Image (tube, rainbow, N blue to C red; front, side):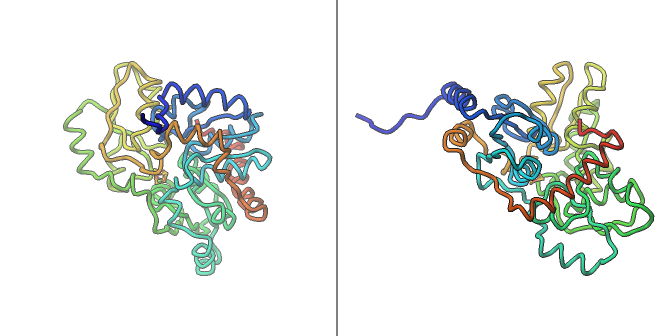
Amino acid sequence: MNDLPKDLTSQELLQQIGRLKKEREAVILAHNYQPPEIQDLADFTGDSLELSMIAAKTPAKVIVFCGVQFMGETAAILSPDKTVLLPVLEAGCTLADYATAEQLREAKKKYPNAIVVTYVNSSAEVKAETDICCTSANAIQIVESIEGNRPILFVSDYNLGHYAAKKTGKNIILWNGCCPTHALLSPFAIAKAKKKWPEAQVIMHPECKPETLELADFVGSTSGMLKYAKSQPAGASFIVGTEVGLLHRLQKENPDKTFHPASDYLICPMMKMTTLKNVKDSLEKMQYVVKVPAEIRLKAKAAVDAMLQYTASLKITTK
Ligand code: SF4
């Protein structure tokens, strides 16, 4: 007789997640790049900032953040009174790892007059050394808001910083970091996709390389791409230059349109670590609690709040 415990089916896992969610008074948030089954089970899907803002407003006591570490940290920074859980402890972000607080402190010594604008894809410690954060949805407006020709130290995505510099003409000092998933997308891959689907519009995330972005019909954040696709007529088709997880939501919300991945290789391994089983384990065992030390949290929050206040004054939403 085989005494090994049998694996639960997806249906059983979903039932257990539903029961545990009620018991814990929890809400489940999933980033747009999460696997389809995780997006489908979540109460809310969105980009990292949308989800952190939902986390801050929800009456739920527990937030299960299906995403990567910096996203859980941002939710914890904005919601210190709630328990934020990251189902996979090892789910980091390679782009965020390109900048440490120590490196940023050194760079600030090198450029003492620079204002530090940091992409939200960064650790809490790096945010704590920052003047104002930005997202891919508001980077251009945040950079534009810096008065005069004051140098801007843009941390840590080179490609997003380059794109913001090109769009605004501002004096930006670029950081040597990138998202390896988006940096992988080449002009050659776009040319190949365009040959295959000549009628399709090319939509792309600004974390892609400058020479690849040149080939885009529309450049925007994940929320920007969702909004743009919705605005296009029925029957439209798109080549999507971002992590393949977004295609699930694009197709679900636009059943009358067609979406093709710009490349089958645009997969973030960190985003794909989350499974139904570890969401269930996360709720059952209350793991892994995201903690940000109070001193770091307050400084990081000031940089995130500066961004939120500015975008609110411009009425920019992340949607
Ligand atoms: S897609 Fe890139 S930026 Fe997003 S979590 Fe993965 S490594 Fe980080």
